Image 1 (cartoon, rainbow, N blue to C red):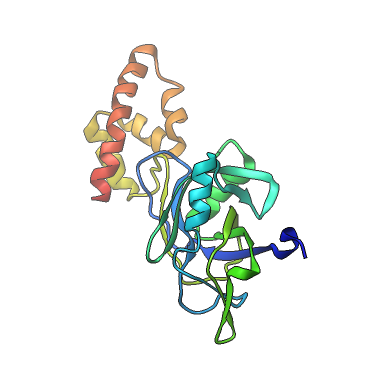
Image 2: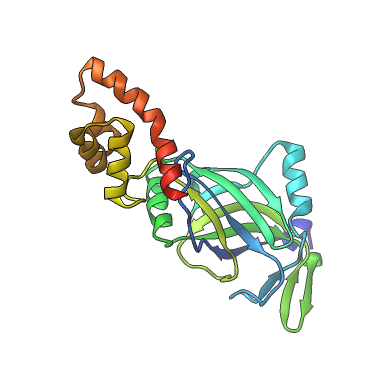
Length: 229
């Protein structure tokens, strides 16, 4: 039997359970692509600690990285994985959605409603599998991709955070409108920003007012920080 015949493609799904709004670039998020140990997943598999170490080192050596796909479809990339952290709990993935891609925009919205999961696609050599109490212990896998999907198989993972652009619906709207007024926006400007976002705020401003709004825009992140604190 050839080496290629020894390799198997396998998917393990890990849920994105709780997203926390952050104040950095929209579409950036973190979550556990896989967790180690514990009960077998719905496929009867357990991932051993460090199972991804060799694969991650190989990606780094070759200057490659696992793909970020929509529903394991190789023709539908939706972003890029920026880094992976191999911790005691599992493989923590940090990525960024490409929000100009329709599926990525949909994924971003679904993430906020906790409606998606992470699922890993990898190549597995049978020599790296050990049967333990009827479950398959995967001791080494080659990580090919991490997808966003809807059906989780492993329910023990946790999401670290979803980083979103300014979202006036996140804090209490009245509290946020007061903060905008305190920062220098007029009542009309504050209401336009709350109802329609930045475009609604800026489109009807004169050149002089637009410059003022640009200055105030720099204060918005600080306002959201204060409200969340």
